[in-house]
Image (cartoon, rainbow, N blue to C red; front, side, top):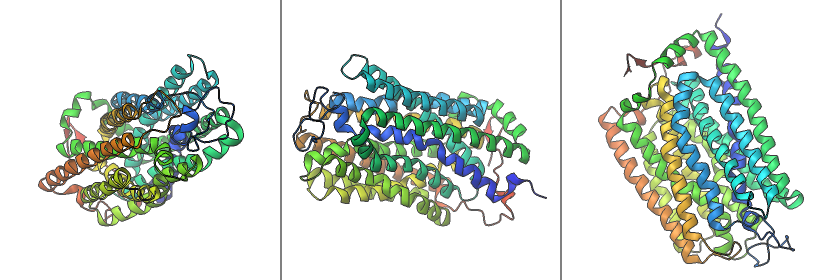
Length: 469
């Protein structure tokens, strides 16, 4: 009789709890995007009901646009700097270590971020909140690495893009919940309780991390692969990054330039919509900005299934970059309703994410996947942080409540356009190199010859310091 870990239900049970790992941290990451008016609002305001759009006073924490964008930059930079070390440690010490440590850091980071809001009007507010974002970034970015490592182990060779689509979709579910409910919750209970609510969600994700670590450990033991994995992990060295192929690095920069145009835009989209377009209050603007993730929630799973069926990962990445160009052109130079652009961006983001993240396990061996994901995280989060800082510099004003001039917003959209053009260039190079090396990224990965579920468990591919297979 086959062991439980060889059956499909066990793989999908692992996937279910794996999907829950980043729900809370993604919710916390996007809270400032919804409450930008409150973060930048006046600390002495007596009328906390009016919106920035109406020109009235908004009660809040008193941050400037530059300080607000620094919340996202510090998250991205910490995520980037710790990603390499985290990936290497996960490869060396295993998933159990990574799941426990990094999920705990997201809880501590979200708690410190919430605690900082209690010091409104004092010099301690910004340092405490930045430290909280630092811990949240170090935990969440590293947690994504181990999450992807678990997914790639249990689904490499079958339903890989579907599995990655599901994990991305559940992560985005946290963002969607944030954009739909955070503003309403804050209006009833205030910003303090809203931030502590995010911490509670991170605690629930921490419990999911404990569960998936147990399932992963038990499953590998049943398959008899735990010892082999430990032996391969001992061979992993930081110098192995030199063996990562050119296709991998082109994937990294393709991901970086695309995400440089998505994350910084969503972070400031709510205020952009209120400043440029007439008739949008904070609540509606948050819904429209969140439409990017609403679409992703719906399409990521379908996109993963399609990619498993047709392959064409490299081609899809190129097409998504091409189709994203009109989004920022419309936002920069026209007054077409912003919902058109955010829905459009949601579609291209969904297919792009499902294609590129499931491509990385196809070009690097399982034994060094954590390190590869770490370097990917380092480069693309470093880029996002720099873009957030650039946006803050472009928008920076002395008044935290002032309506930002449209020419400044136009410069921001041109910055997003430039990143998208760079993504097109790297994706073209990626497809050219991939074609010369056998076209792996554009081939099917679903194995038609698998006779049972155990056939879909991946074999370790590193031997004597060289990559096999």
